Amino acid sequence: MNPPPTRIEDRFFVGITGASGVIYGVRVVRALAILGYFVEVAITDAGYRVLQIELGMRIDPATRDAGALAGDAPVSRIRIFNNRSIDAGAASGTYPLRGVIVVPCSMGTLGRIANGYASCLIERVADVALKESRPLVVVPRETPLSKIHLDHCNRLAWAGARIVPAMPAFYHLPKTIDDLVDHLAGKILDAAGVEHNISKRWGVLSKPPGDPGPRPDLEDDAAPGNLAPGDLAPHDGEGCDS
Image: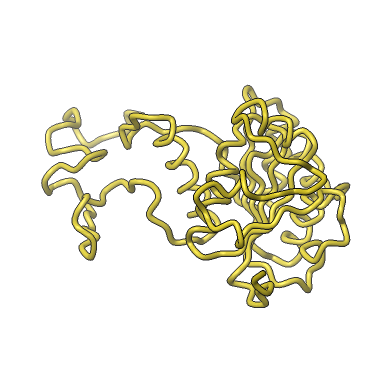
């Protein structure tokens, strides 16, 4: 077994809760592991249930075997913790941790983190991230949002968290559910400060490896997911049409 990393830049903590959209959490965990990070994961009781319902993924909470969660990612880089283990290393501010991602984040978990109520490992690690000024990315998945939900999002943003709602986009012309999932996972990794290439970026041409093809405007040839000249309706340059 590989020794645990001691450098803060090597390790992330990911919390998966019982909101719909657990596929986002799975994709983020796998992407981080493939990118070379060690990923510590905690899953709520409801999270285990939603993994089974939405993905048919069965993980024994007793053994916490990370094989199913890892998929084609290196399982040696993923470790699942008991969410009741508030004495785990990540629950301490002295623990080397690059960032924390809660994806998907249920409204219950969102409210408890926003109000400093650390009742389990996920909530405690998120609380520590805020007090240590570490990156904390929260991915709420609910609709419609009540005023209480919005207030909790605002409180977390005010405290320093990045709020990345699980809202699919379509400007990249997705053709599959995987395309939608990858795009949001890319946004989550961006918010966490992780370099990646798992999703298309607006304004960047699809070119051979080694040529990233920066495109600050839309005056070059069209690329998949980008608009070509003339695709936008003309306007008079005044006001806002959105």
